Image 1 (cartoon, rainbow, N blue to C red):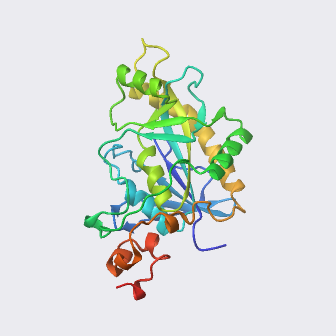
Image 2 (image 1 turned 180 degrees about the vertical axis):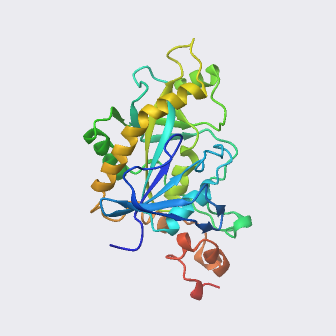
Length: 298
């Protein structure tokens, strides 16, 4: 087995560990973008190395807007992760998508406003002057989506394959007018963290998919307000299904080929190579190192 950890898992609200992980080790990652939300828990599931990160910290201490998404994703990249599965609590804006359903979305709308959306063109971290335009017509990896759907089906979850995920800024829940507006746009489910994780994972050349477990229905019953109490009670009911599905997905990925997204940057970096400097490459070596060698870059 390679020393690299090919599979990563991000746990959202209520998903603070993966029960199937054994031989556990806590690893801190220093990244060009600062510290991740918490240490990464590295272990094995049926002999395969897996890295797990509690998105909001072990004690859920960081709100969605304050998350250092770039450090979280880059930390996985430094460990060699190719396949990244995210567990996200979300709200449904469709009557047929009931609480307890797990959606594996295939489309994404980013309605956030305050987040760093790219590793590149950021002078503060040394990538100023490097411009990348990633393809994003399919924001989630179809290959990994199929694996997640199969894993959920085989473990008995109520799963829906495909759907439109809209990321709100948070940390508050949406107003009724906002929710109805999002539904009129075609959104199916709402959450607070899938953007910019999906964009950053694509820049990091990882396959990325979401198991979005529904904790509330935002427009079905206008007399019932969405509250933390309601969400957390339903999260607790969904935890077992997510744990079982992640364990099965890891097994299904045992002999997976390299990620289909592995060469994304080869065709996405628009900056002329003559203008790429050694300092820029060394600022994000996990991203640029395979395309530009520091010893031959001015």
